[in-house]
Length: 613
Ligand code: AGP
Image (cartoon, rainbow, N blue to C red):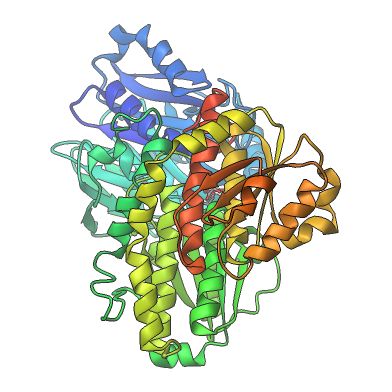
């Protein structure tokens, strides 16, 4: 979480920094700040709340900022210290000449702070970050070399960090480093950028260097890279696979709505190059699972957080169904704090939109140490997780700006269909006819989503009718239990309405006690083997006066009598219904939040990339 950006070059630095921070707002947005070197002096501007507040502050200082050509900026998601102006980054050393921005958590900051106070440093904020500013300044006082000061100071730090550092007396130098937090250097014509993520720099350059942990980069008129032991490193420059146009709303009111509408094309994109022809095998070029490896697998563990965890739950169902290999799914944050019995006969699949989620990354590293094959399903083939992978399934959803995941979820689902079919083909666990039938259904999913997207009025009507309810229950069974969880999560995230997903059979084991005429119960009622069972569970809710909504692909007449509101979606084989059912639930959450006037793309307390445990 938190976004950092830095610039050294000939452009007006304030514009570059603010523009970069705007693109990183998805990482946190409770306060922001920049530091520049203007006329040989470090100047710092900060504001609480949204980035616009900082922009308003800066408009009063255009004269003093206009000539600056070097600076660092930060957008914060508070971990240590409230989201106030004083705790906003950048932070400085005691004399104010050395200034830093930081993303991550300094775990030993209390011990470091005590020592630094004893040495005479005076602290202004409650943040862990300020410790690092003092620590680097102490080293700088000894070495008079900013690169070395950063290298030596970070050796004393425990935890995660990406840092951008400047010193008043070195107006032509920007230093950056990282450990367990993302940071890249953008390389332009006679200019350099640092950023937590690609969107902050993609409008300026497509050439970049991804820093490895503990490397320190020094940017002046040239770039120098060293490792933790002060050895020179040759930078590995990459071409970024992003287009600036992806960051525009393209006429939609919110990024979330635009991203929901992109889903048919996203699915086509995920399938292209992997499923050429229904008669040919699935091609996953970066998956290195041989027949031998699959034969020796005892089990598969899938680890993920949030929405990615829900995609993983669908993935479990598919792999067990198509490949008959037992699959466990677990939240990464739980996985990492218990005895890890993973081994070389376990395939560990990490699922993450961002590829940077701290809990999932830690879980992956733990299982890698135990010798497991690591397969990563991510939307960011340039991410830290992708770099840790033995096998990779890039989900190709394109950049997702809205904090609430939508298109990345359906792209993860499609990736799981492809992976499960691929494994079934390698293992020989499905017959040819079934494989062809499944592939046929898979390739027509985009058209079915287009039908849903062209029939949004029914969902808007439902949103309007139910927006003022305080609680919601989503029920489903089988493969769509994950859909219920994901639908409820979407509603919680962007409308702040309390919504819970249950396996419908569990309703009578407790949650039914909450039902009365004030409680809407939304049933994900897809045709298939649990249809009748779910219908009985809905009847039980009706008997307790709950208001019943159905999301269904059935034309069953008895539904009209039972349900207060019906959202109708196209027919599909039950195994593919999670894809079809996810989209109307995303739209329902969107329209409820929009109707309630919520900040859809930047919901309170959330950040898109959760890089702290
Ligand atoms: C989704 O709407 C959420 N923003 C959140 O649950 C997210 O899915 C979770 O933090 C995991 O992120 P990742 O997929 O980038 O690992």
